[in-house]
Image 1 (cartoon, rainbow, N blue to C red):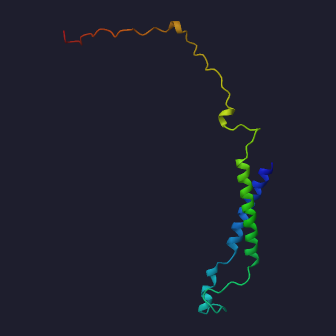
Image 2: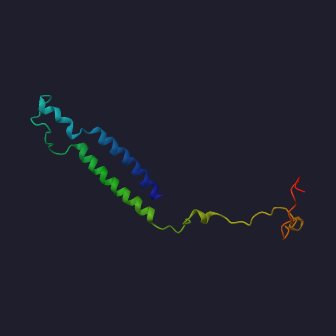
Amino acid sequence: MLQNVITFLHGLLCFAIVALVLLQRGKGADAGAGFGAGASGTVFGARGSATFFSKLTAVLATLFFVTSMSLAWFATRPRSETPKSIVDNVVTEPAPASGVDPAAVPALPDTPPAEQPAPGEQ
C-alpha cells in the first residue's frame, strides 16, 4: 500500500519537475541583452539570487531523490507473502493420457529389411 502511494507521488514529482524546468528561462536567454536588446550591461548577465522557480525545482528534485531511494528500498526488500518467482505459481499436473493402447502399437523390427532390387535392374 505504501509503495503504491510513493509510486504515485514519484510520478507527480516527475511531471512537476518537467513543468517547472520548462517554465524557467535559460541562462543564455539574456545573451542578446548585452548587444542593446535589453537593459543588461553584460552578454551573459550574472544571475542574482535564486528565483522562486529555481528554489521550488530544488525542493522537488530533493523529494524526487527521496522517493527514488524509497522505491529502490522497496524493490530490494524480501517479501515472504509473495512467491519469489513466477514458476512458483505454476501448478504441476501429470500429462494427460493420449488414449492409445500401447499394446496396439506395432513394434519396430530389430533388423533392417534386405535390400530389394530396384525395378528394371533384374
